[in-house]
Amino acid sequence: PVSAGPLLDAQQVLMQFGGLRALNQVDLSIAHGSIHGLIGPNGSGKSTMMNVLTGIYQPTAGQVVFNGQSLAGQTPSHIALSGIARTFQNVQLFGEMTATDNVLVGLHHTFKSNTLDVMLRTPRYLREDAAAREQAASLLDFVGLTDLSEEQARNLPYGKQRMLEIARALGLGPRLLLLDEPAAGLPPADLPELTKMIQKIRDHGITVILIEHHMDVVMGISDTVSVLDFGQKIAEGKPADVQSNPAVVEAYLGS
Ligand code: ADP
Ligand code: MG
Image (cartoon, rainbow, N blue to C red; front, top):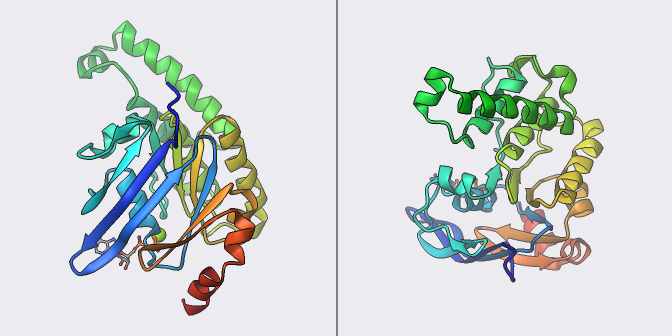
């Protein structure tokens, strides 16, 4: 059901680690169908926000509502299945497994088969497995990895590993995809391809939160950009306005 209002609404999120407020009363509202950039100097709280939005951290205070439902007390796997998928700042793949199998691992989380179905290879399991293989192939095609689908993940060039992570996250069928610095470590020549892919994902109706240090990437494709500095949101708006905001310039110069 399409709810009125934002797809995700975080209000007054406080994340405290001992005496450090990694997030300090942050509001974040993500519009349906948008690409929402999240930027800020190192240590400003961007990844912490991702961890709150995916249930890895329970915020010290504040609340997050996704698609009309509070995330309070929900486990990361429940949140993933309810429509928020992510990639990590540092690639997290099964290096020994093929690209296809890395995607299949994600898809298996969406199976209805139980352990007994799997062990006995029941018709239900075989049906789901065949469908998953087809879906894995189309996801790998979507991210341009068809030719490398049977390579071990660890043997893929770094840029391709990042694409594989995106394919795996998309396998969850998310409404919202969180990308934590997807361009980090990519050769500049790969950036246009990544940019196009993120736009293609949005064109499929998936809302995207994009954490990114490459300003041309994030400013080029975001509808809205929010800026964190020392755990606080210091600016928000259209890319051009945010870029010329003196507080933002100051935060980056000071870092
Ligand atoms: P960013 O992604 O913007 O670079 P992070 O969200 O990773 O920043 O970190 C924000 C701040 O919170 C940093 O000072 C970091 O050291 C701290 N921090 C993040 N996670 C933890 C944790 N699990 N325990 C203690 N401090 C943390
Ligand atoms: Mg980070």
